[in-house]
Image 1: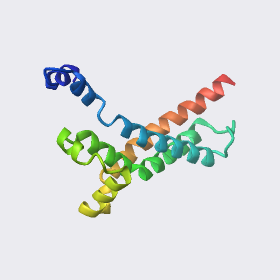
Image 2: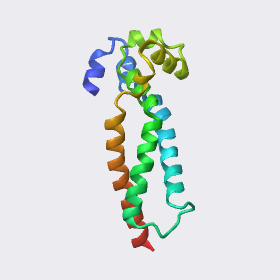
Image 3: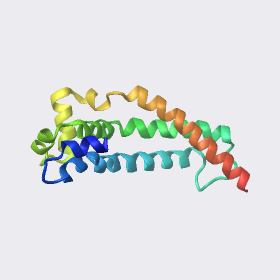
Image 4: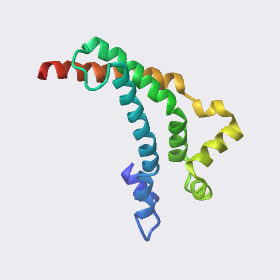
Length: 147
C-alpha cells in the first residue's frame, strides 16, 4: 500500500500519495469512540456497575456479547459513512468536502433510504458479539486471577 501511494503521488511531492494511506482516519476515530463508550456503558450496566468483582467469566462473555452487539448496532450508520469516505475517489472527496457528517448521513438516507445506513448490520453484530464475548470473558478471568 505504501509503494502504491508513493507511485500515485505526483512528481513534485509524495504528500498526496501518503495522505491517501490515512484517508478516513478521522472517520475511524468518529466511529470508534462512540462504539467503545456504548460498549463499556452497557457492559457496566449489565454487570452490576462499578467494577463489580463477582462477575464470572461466563457472565462476562454473555454481557460482553450483548453490550458489543448493541454498540455495533447503534453505530452502524457511522461505520457505513466511514467506509464510504474511505472508499471514495479524491475527486468525489473534494466535491463533498463541505458536507458535514450529519449532512452525509442525511444524503445517504435521502438518496438510498434509511435502511442503507444499516447495511451489513447482521454480520457486524454477529462478529462483534463473538469478539465481545471473548474480550470480556478474558477480562473477567484476568481480573479474578489477579485478585
